[in-house]
Length: 176
Image (cartoon, rainbow, N blue to C red; front, top):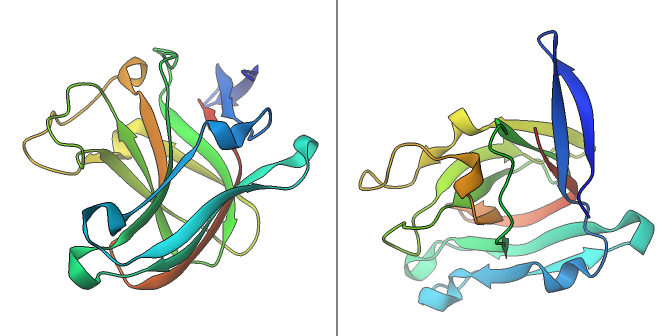
C-alpha cells in the first residue's frame, strides 16, 4: 500500500510516502536473517503482530558477538523505485531503549555485507524517528560514499554490533 500526503518542513511542503505499514500480507515481504548464516550464534525472530488494521513489525532476540557474529535483522528487498526527491526515511518505533540501525542497499555493492547505515534509539514509548539520507554512512571505505533514493532496493531494521537483548517494534516506515 502506497499512500502519499504532504508535510511542511522549513516552510516548504514536501510529500511523504508510506513505504510499509505492515498490512496486506507483510510477512511475505519481510525476511528474518541472523548472523548464523556466517557462523555466529545470535538468535531471534521477526514477526508481524497485531490485527490487519494495526499491524506492527517486531524484531526480538539475543545479539551475540561470539564467533564473529553480532546481528539480527529483518529486511525487505524490493524493485519499486523510491521517489527520486526523497531525502530520508521516517519510522515510528518502540522498544527497549537500545540502539538499532536502518541498513539500506543499492545495486552494485560488491559485497553482500555492504550497506549504508544510520542508527536510532527505540525508546520505550512510541516515537517518530527521522533519518535523513545524508546521515547514512557507508559500512566500508570501498563503497561509493553516497547513494540516490531511487537506487535503494533493500531496507533492513537491524540489532547489531554488541551483546544485548533486542526488542524493537515498528508501526510504519515512510519516505519524506
